[in-house]
Amino acid sequence: MLPAQAFADEGSGVAAILPQMDEFIPMLVAFIILWIILAKFGWPLFEGMLVKRETTIKDALEQSENARVESERVLAEYKRQLEETKAQSAQIIADAKKTGEAVKADITAKAQAEAAGMIEKAHAAIEADKKAAIAELQGSVADLSVAVASRLIGEDLNDDEHRKIIERYVNEAGSFNAN
Image 1 (tube, rainbow, N blue to C red):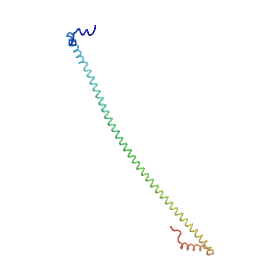
Image 2: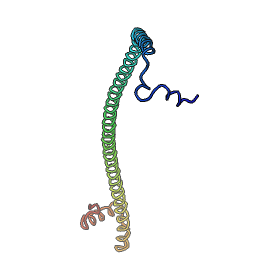
Image 3: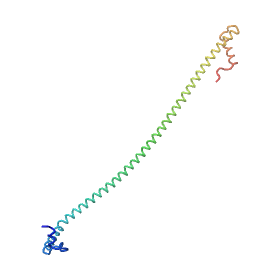
Image 4: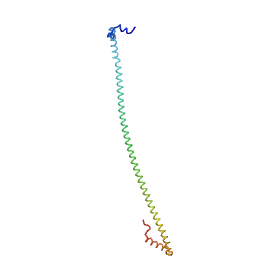
């Protein structure tokens, strides 16, 4: 039949939800037996699972905290090493600059010394060429003077007489070797 009619026959209101006494006692006994079995066997298993789960979660949290602390320590170590490396590289660069400046100064000093030596050699060569040119010029002047004197005097002088005249002329005119 219809389900609505089945409920209508049993009564209405609060009586519809209350069990009948002949059904209540066996249900109460079954509930108490079930509760005792669950309390004796089920609840310890359930509690053991909860404790195990709690322990697993605590261990996982502890491990993650330890891993976080370790990672922070490693990060701090890496940062310290990075700073040391930066400081070392800055020191190496500074040392390289100092060495470069020292090498530059050394090369410059050597180049200046070499240039001064070359200038000194050039001056000495010029002075030697100048002395040679003056000596050659004196010889030419002496020969020219003898030739002019021979034409003016009209006589041919011997070598000793030429030398005496030239020496007298050079003494009167001054030295060609003036600096």
